[in-house]
Image (cartoon, helix red, strand yellow):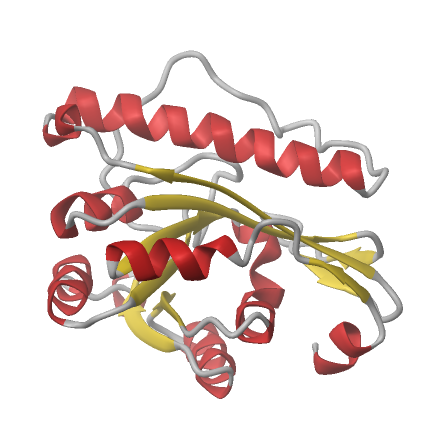
Length: 229
Protein backbone atom coordinates (compact mmCIF):
# COMPACT_ATOMS: atom_id res chain seq x y z
CA UNK A 1 0.00 0.00 0.00
CA UNK A 2 2.92 2.38 0.60
CA UNK A 3 4.02 1.77 -2.99
CA UNK A 4 0.47 2.20 -4.30
CA UNK A 5 0.00 5.54 -2.52
CA UNK A 6 3.50 6.76 -3.43
CA UNK A 7 2.90 6.20 -7.16
CA UNK A 8 -0.69 7.44 -7.30
CA UNK A 9 -2.52 10.74 -7.51
CA UNK A 10 -4.40 11.19 -4.26
CA UNK A 11 -7.58 13.27 -4.24
CA UNK A 12 -8.59 13.84 -0.60
CA UNK A 13 -11.68 15.94 -1.48
CA UNK A 14 -13.24 16.97 1.85
CA UNK A 15 -12.17 13.87 3.79
CA UNK A 16 -9.72 15.84 5.99
CA UNK A 17 -12.83 17.41 7.58
CA UNK A 18 -12.89 14.28 9.71
CA UNK A 19 -10.07 15.83 11.76
CA UNK A 20 -12.26 18.86 12.49
CA UNK A 21 -15.37 16.80 13.20
CA UNK A 22 -13.47 14.63 15.66
CA UNK A 23 -11.93 17.67 17.34
CA UNK A 24 -15.31 19.39 17.70
CA UNK A 25 -17.07 16.34 19.15
CA UNK A 26 -14.09 14.61 20.79
CA UNK A 27 -14.49 11.62 18.50
CA UNK A 28 -16.62 10.22 15.70
CA UNK A 29 -17.88 6.95 14.23
CA UNK A 30 -17.05 6.45 10.53
CA UNK A 31 -19.03 3.85 8.58
CA UNK A 32 -17.84 2.29 5.31
CA UNK A 33 -18.39 -0.70 3.02
CA UNK A 34 -16.29 -3.85 3.38
CA UNK A 35 -15.18 -3.89 -0.28
CA UNK A 36 -12.60 -1.16 0.44
CA UNK A 37 -11.21 -2.73 3.62
CA UNK A 38 -7.90 -3.73 1.98
CA UNK A 39 -6.78 -0.09 2.06
CA UNK A 40 -8.30 1.11 5.31
CA UNK A 41 -5.18 0.54 7.39
CA UNK A 42 -2.74 2.51 5.27
CA UNK A 43 -5.31 4.85 3.75
CA UNK A 44 -6.36 6.40 7.06
CA UNK A 45 -2.82 6.58 8.41
CA UNK A 46 -1.82 8.41 5.21
CA UNK A 47 -4.11 11.31 6.19
CA UNK A 48 -2.79 11.38 9.75
CA UNK A 49 -5.77 9.65 11.35
CA UNK A 50 -5.38 7.12 14.13
CA UNK A 51 -8.24 4.72 13.55
CA UNK A 52 -9.98 2.35 15.91
CA UNK A 53 -11.80 -0.65 14.51
CA UNK A 54 -13.08 -4.19 14.94
CA UNK A 55 -11.62 -7.42 13.56
CA UNK A 56 -13.15 -10.85 13.81
CA UNK A 57 -11.68 -13.51 16.07
CA UNK A 58 -9.83 -16.25 14.17
CA UNK A 59 -6.89 -16.72 11.82
CA UNK A 60 -8.00 -14.20 9.20
CA UNK A 61 -8.86 -11.67 11.90
CA UNK A 62 -5.41 -12.12 13.41
CA UNK A 63 -3.73 -11.28 10.08
CA UNK A 64 -5.96 -8.23 9.66
CA UNK A 65 -5.26 -7.12 13.23
CA UNK A 66 -1.49 -7.26 12.73
CA UNK A 67 -1.76 -5.22 9.52
CA UNK A 68 -3.93 -2.61 11.22
CA UNK A 69 -1.64 -2.29 14.22
CA UNK A 70 1.33 -1.72 11.91
CA UNK A 71 -0.60 1.34 10.72
CA UNK A 72 -1.24 2.67 14.23
CA UNK A 73 -4.80 1.34 14.61
CA UNK A 74 -6.37 0.31 17.90
CA UNK A 75 -8.12 -3.00 17.20
CA UNK A 76 -10.90 -4.74 19.11
CA UNK A 77 -11.55 -8.42 18.48
CA UNK A 78 -15.08 -9.76 18.05
CA UNK A 79 -17.46 -9.22 15.17
CA UNK A 80 -20.23 -11.05 13.39
CA UNK A 81 -18.35 -13.86 11.69
CA UNK A 82 -20.31 -17.09 11.79
CA UNK A 83 -18.86 -19.83 13.95
CA UNK A 84 -18.55 -19.61 17.72
CA UNK A 85 -14.74 -19.84 17.60
CA UNK A 86 -14.60 -16.56 15.69
CA UNK A 87 -16.99 -14.58 17.88
CA UNK A 88 -16.56 -12.88 21.23
CA UNK A 89 -19.46 -11.66 23.31
CA UNK A 90 -19.40 -8.22 24.88
CA UNK A 91 -17.16 -6.50 22.35
CA UNK A 92 -19.78 -3.87 21.49
CA UNK A 93 -20.02 -2.76 25.12
CA UNK A 94 -16.22 -2.81 25.37
CA UNK A 95 -16.00 -0.42 22.42
CA UNK A 96 -18.65 1.85 23.93
CA UNK A 97 -16.84 1.94 27.28
CA UNK A 98 -13.54 2.71 25.56
CA UNK A 99 -14.99 5.62 23.59
CA UNK A 100 -16.67 7.04 26.69
CA UNK A 101 -13.37 7.09 28.60
CA UNK A 102 -10.85 7.93 25.85
CA UNK A 103 -10.47 11.27 24.08
CA UNK A 104 -10.50 11.64 20.30
CA UNK A 105 -11.53 8.10 19.33
CA UNK A 106 -12.42 7.68 15.65
CA UNK A 107 -14.02 4.32 14.95
CA UNK A 108 -13.89 3.06 11.37
CA UNK A 109 -16.33 0.18 10.94
CA UNK A 110 -17.19 -1.89 7.88
CA UNK A 111 -20.92 -2.03 8.36
CA UNK A 112 -21.67 -4.90 5.98
CA UNK A 113 -18.82 -7.06 7.35
CA UNK A 114 -17.64 -9.52 8.05
CA UNK A 115 -19.81 -11.85 5.93
CA UNK A 116 -22.32 -9.59 4.23
CA UNK A 117 -24.66 -9.29 2.53
CA UNK A 118 -22.82 -6.49 0.70
CA UNK A 119 -24.20 -2.96 0.84
CA UNK A 120 -26.52 -3.81 3.73
CA UNK A 121 -25.76 -1.93 6.93
CA UNK A 122 -25.72 -3.46 10.39
CA UNK A 123 -26.52 -1.26 13.36
CA UNK A 124 -23.53 -1.77 15.67
CA UNK A 125 -21.72 1.40 14.63
CA UNK A 126 -24.88 3.47 15.09
CA UNK A 127 -25.40 2.00 18.57
CA UNK A 128 -21.85 3.00 19.55
CA UNK A 129 -22.45 6.56 18.34
CA UNK A 130 -25.82 6.72 20.10
CA UNK A 131 -24.54 5.45 23.42
CA UNK A 132 -21.45 7.69 23.36
CA UNK A 133 -23.16 10.84 22.04
CA UNK A 134 -20.83 11.01 19.00
CA UNK A 135 -21.58 11.94 15.39
CA UNK A 136 -21.66 9.46 12.53
CA UNK A 137 -19.82 10.09 9.27
CA UNK A 138 -19.91 8.07 6.06
CA UNK A 139 -16.48 7.34 4.62
CA UNK A 140 -15.20 6.07 1.30
CA UNK A 141 -11.77 5.40 -0.22
CA UNK A 142 -11.84 4.33 -3.86
CA UNK A 143 -9.50 3.83 -6.82
CA UNK A 144 -9.48 3.94 -10.59
CA UNK A 145 -7.37 0.79 -11.14
CA UNK A 146 -7.81 -2.33 -9.04
CA UNK A 147 -8.11 -6.08 -8.84
CA UNK A 148 -11.30 -7.61 -7.45
CA UNK A 149 -10.97 -10.72 -5.30
CA UNK A 150 -13.44 -13.65 -5.54
CA UNK A 151 -14.82 -12.96 -2.05
CA UNK A 152 -18.39 -12.29 -0.93
CA UNK A 153 -17.75 -8.53 -1.19
CA UNK A 154 -15.46 -8.68 -4.26
CA UNK A 155 -12.82 -6.93 -2.18
CA UNK A 156 -10.89 -4.32 -4.17
CA UNK A 157 -7.08 -4.29 -4.20
CA UNK A 158 -5.75 -1.03 -5.70
CA UNK A 159 -2.85 -1.11 -8.14
CA UNK A 160 0.15 1.23 -8.33
CA UNK A 161 0.13 4.31 -10.61
CA UNK A 162 -3.47 4.96 -9.74
CA UNK A 163 -6.00 7.65 -8.85
CA UNK A 164 -7.17 7.36 -5.24
CA UNK A 165 -10.18 9.33 -4.06
CA UNK A 166 -11.32 9.97 -0.50
CA UNK A 167 -14.96 10.84 0.20
CA UNK A 168 -16.81 11.91 3.33
CA UNK A 169 -20.44 12.68 4.12
CA UNK A 170 -21.78 14.00 7.40
CA UNK A 171 -21.67 14.48 10.27
CA UNK A 172 -24.99 12.95 11.26
CA UNK A 173 -26.43 13.29 14.76
CA UNK A 174 -28.12 10.13 15.98
CA UNK A 175 -31.76 11.17 16.54
CA UNK A 176 -33.58 10.65 19.81
CA UNK A 177 -35.97 8.33 17.96
CA UNK A 178 -33.10 5.84 17.53
CA UNK A 179 -33.61 4.82 21.16
CA UNK A 180 -36.44 2.61 19.87
CA UNK A 181 -35.96 -0.37 17.59
CA UNK A 182 -38.13 1.18 14.88
CA UNK A 183 -36.34 4.52 15.09
CA UNK A 184 -32.91 2.88 15.03
CA UNK A 185 -33.85 0.88 11.95
CA UNK A 186 -35.21 3.97 10.17
CA UNK A 187 -31.96 5.86 10.84
CA UNK A 188 -29.93 2.83 9.72
CA UNK A 189 -31.85 2.77 6.45
CA UNK A 190 -31.18 6.47 5.88
CA UNK A 191 -27.45 5.98 6.45
CA UNK A 192 -27.39 2.83 4.31
CA UNK A 193 -28.95 4.66 1.39
CA UNK A 194 -26.61 7.64 1.79
CA UNK A 195 -23.58 5.35 1.93
CA UNK A 196 -24.81 3.65 -1.26
CA UNK A 197 -25.02 7.11 -2.84
CA UNK A 198 -21.47 7.85 -1.73
CA UNK A 199 -20.20 4.61 -3.24
CA UNK A 200 -22.12 5.32 -6.45
CA UNK A 201 -20.47 8.74 -6.64
CA UNK A 202 -17.03 7.16 -6.34
CA UNK A 203 -17.78 4.66 -9.13
CA UNK A 204 -19.01 7.48 -11.35
CA UNK A 205 -15.97 9.64 -10.63
CA UNK A 206 -13.63 6.83 -11.61
CA UNK A 207 -15.58 6.04 -14.79
CA UNK A 208 -16.57 2.58 -13.56
CA UNK A 209 -19.91 0.78 -13.86
CA UNK A 210 -21.84 0.54 -10.63
CA UNK A 211 -22.24 -2.99 -9.23
CA UNK A 212 -25.65 -4.48 -9.92
CA UNK A 213 -26.29 -5.01 -6.20
CA UNK A 214 -25.44 -1.40 -5.26
CA UNK A 215 -29.14 -0.63 -4.84
CA UNK A 216 -31.19 1.14 -2.23
CA UNK A 217 -34.11 -0.57 -0.57
CA UNK A 218 -37.34 1.03 0.50
CA UNK A 219 -38.11 -1.29 3.38
CA UNK A 220 -35.64 -2.47 5.98
CA UNK A 221 -35.30 -5.41 8.30
CA UNK A 222 -34.25 -4.96 11.95
CA UNK A 223 -30.67 -5.94 12.73
CA UNK A 224 -28.52 -5.66 15.85
CA UNK A 225 -25.15 -6.87 14.68
CA UNK A 226 -21.93 -4.88 14.68
CA UNK A 227 -19.85 -4.90 11.50
CA UNK A 228 -16.27 -6.21 11.55
CA UNK A 229 -13.23 -5.88 9.36
